[in-house]
Image 1: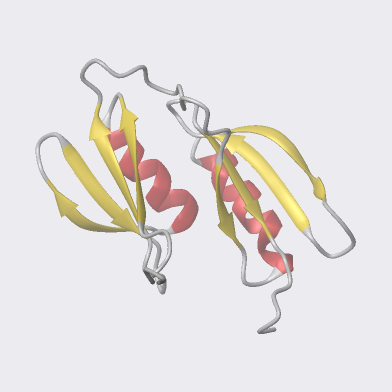
Image 2: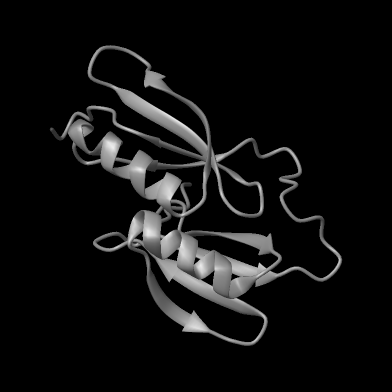
Length: 128
């Protein structure tokens, strides 16, 4: 018997400053605010069904991922990598690494204001 899902729908991340986090992710990824409370916000990527829940940290270590190395966003067009890099720099990100995994498969790794590592890459999929 199989239990079918829609796949990964969201992650939840502890942050130190909700407003700063919201502005960062909106600047870099054009994310849209879906829901806001005093202790958390939900942002989503335009045209996708993903959600990142950012929670105001209470006792959790901020920037510590507990075994998760990074989370990633897949580009629709490999030529957009430089746009993302510039938007990340403009938003205050620290670039960790940039290059190509294989020809025409660019990537960049950077840290958000709380130190979480983010990957943005392009990869051809069977649907393309």
